Length: 221
Ligand code: SAH
Image (spheres, rainbow, N blue to C red):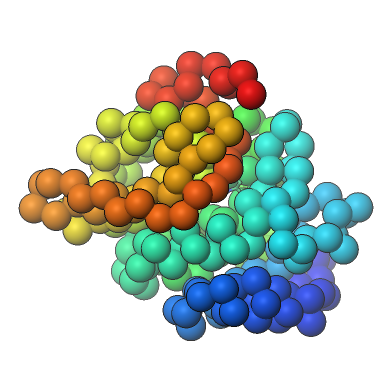
């Protein structure tokens, strides 16, 4: 059985120093970051580094985002307990677990089968029963479960994929890193009365979103 109490002091320290002091104010987001055992989402040999201020490798050349970025993107979505959320890029399942504590249901799509199945198993074992992992090209969204109140893209895209914009509910929010292979900026896109508004947030660096409505193959760095 996973020990979720382990690393509690490191987790509290992460929330205080990396999140609260850097301006993440929402108590609900801080509480979710305090609750999710991040070490359970990385390989055993990385457990002791799970609460460091860095992204970490999760296999397949992919990474789990730095805690601050997870919190900042989650906060930007202003989740309500009745919201249905969609994440693209499940990876380890960590971001989905954080979202699941703030939304009613979380759908998450991962293109790499090994990552999708290990994340799904891990989330079940840890008790995150309102997360549904799907394997496939997330740039197509999940039309059969749309619309979504909140949409989080955890990989870098050259532009917001059209199917995802279409699957956003009225009043919905999407957070997505947009740019080239090396540099992106987080964009918060909101749908109001059928129109989209875009707010530019901080710079960031994500692994590429590879699919039909993004990079056709991983861009060269
Ligand atoms: N949110 C994850 C980290 C994501 S890393 C976590 O908390 O651990 C980005 C992930 O996006 C990688 O696992 C990568 O395989 C996945 N990805 C890239 N392109 C994708 C696509 N088109 N559809 C679904 N997943 C994709």
